[in-house]
Image (cartoon, rainbow, N blue to C red; front, side):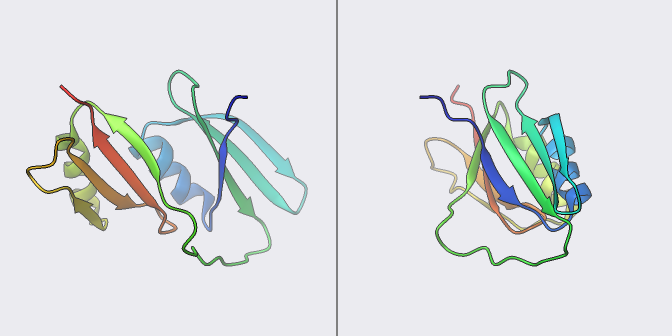
Length: 122
């Protein structure tokens, strides 16, 4: 069995694409418009090993994040430039303690989902 993708609902497709593509570096690989109902945008990492589906419903509905979903996690070689971008944008974030074995931080996407960014082990 192979994991296909993770779907998250978004309130503003353009802001979400800026976050996931421009900031996190994912690439849009497919887009499907379901008439007046919704737009589905599939994003992938550079090797297309993992996919995220952003679902934007056209009816303007709002969502509660709930407490069941945890977070999405990404790995980067160096947290420094990531932290600079987060702080320059004024985004909420929380960093690991300096003594952590694997440095990480959490940032919120435009809809408030937790995104964990881990620094690769050296």
